[in-house]
Structures are given as C-alpha cells and as structure tokens.
Amino acid sequence: MSYSQAWHAREFALGLMMGTPEESFSKLPIYFHNLKKYNPGTVAYIKTDSDDRFEYCFFAIGCVIRAFRECYRKVIIMDGAHLKGMYKGTILHAVAMDGNNQILPIGYGICPKETTDSWTWFPEKLHECIGDVEGLTMVTDKAPTIAKLIRAYKTIEFEFYWGRLRNMRDDVETYFSQIPHEKWTRAYCPATRYDYMTSNSAESMNVVSNKARKLPILPLLEFFRALMHK
Image 1 (cartoon, rainbow, N blue to C red):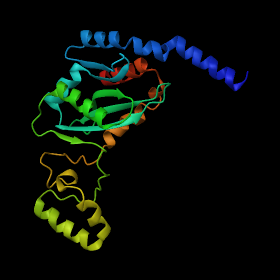
Image 2: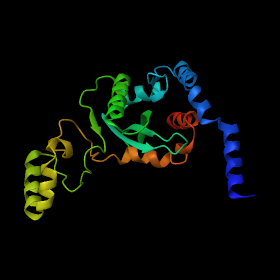
Image 3: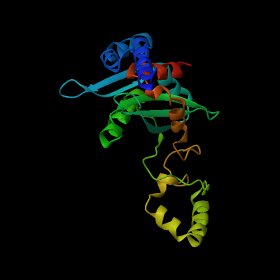
Image 4: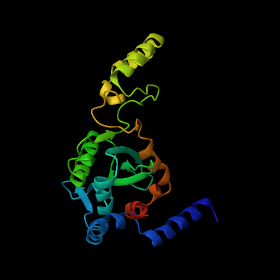
C-alpha cells in the first residue's frame, strides 16, 4: 500500500467516525441548541456573513460562567491558536484561575483568523456571559511580552527599582517607556492582577488541544465541552 492510499483510507475512516468538515458545520446550530437546552445558563452564538456562510462562533457552559462569577479571581486570560483542519481558522480561549492556580476554561470562539474584528466580537460575547465584573483584569498577549523582573507592590518600591534598572539598561528603559505603566506593572495596575503577568495559562490550552485542533469543528467543540465538564 502506498502512502497516498494509506492517507486516503485514514481520511475516509475519520469521515465515517466524525463526519466530514462540511457536515460538521451544517450540524453546528443543532449542537448549540442542545448545548443550551441541557446545560442551563449556557451561552452559544453563531455569526454568518451576508451569504449565510459561517464566520464566527462562541460558546460558554452555564456552570462555568456561574463558577467564575461566584468563586474565582477576577482575572481573565485570553489567547488564540491556529486550527489544523481542512478549513484552518483560529480558536480563541478565555480562562480564569482558581485559588490553587488551576485553570478554568470559561469560553471559546472560532474565527477565520486573529483580527481586530474577531478580537472585538469575542470579548463582547464573553461580556454577555459574565456581565459587568468590578475590578476585572484582562491579560492577553496582544501587548509586548511582559518581563517578570520588577516585582514591586507599591509605587514607591516600583519607582526605586525602576530607577535602578534604567541606570543599568538604556534599551530596557526605551522599550518599556513606550508602554503605559498600568499595562505591565502591578504597582500601577488599576485592578488586582494576582501575579498573572503573561498569557501562559491560556497558552496551556493550546498544548492540551494540539491534536483536537486537527478535527472538524463539531468534534473540536465537543472536545472542549468535555474538557470543561471534566
């Protein structure tokens, strides 16, 4: 058997097991309907274009939304990862952290790629789930990578160590002076960051879903649904 024959046989078998990518997209509305029907409080959306073709989707399980609002630190960490199936695209993650620094996946979105529109639509739908949360802090990788060098809690301590650092490294001063202090320091952050200065927690979801991101959209979403319930 040639490599090509083996590959086509594998793809045929996967199609029998999971359905084709086209079938997956066609079943997405009924999947979201049942998701909301059997999981009270679940939020799920599908956005299509003018020709009724898929653009974005978003979902968050009701019990997870309630857990975040009632029990978790008010920090949301977001990141995205490339999909590897036939139609490619990007999946966006939003996660929270509990008191033991364990990850709680809150919501997921699928879009063609990371753009201003997709990174606007996704947080808007997330806001519809959790509502207005006082003191909420958002951590993403959209800003430059944040160094962990400065650990001052108070502005006086921060200014002391920041002054020493500037005297040692002109390039560091130039780099960080372009970013408002409230974006990369705990001392000036308007809300509580709980020491979360990077999007590593959300990126961990990319590692967990490495194989699942090769699947059609329905098995992919079911993977994340099962992960959240687990």
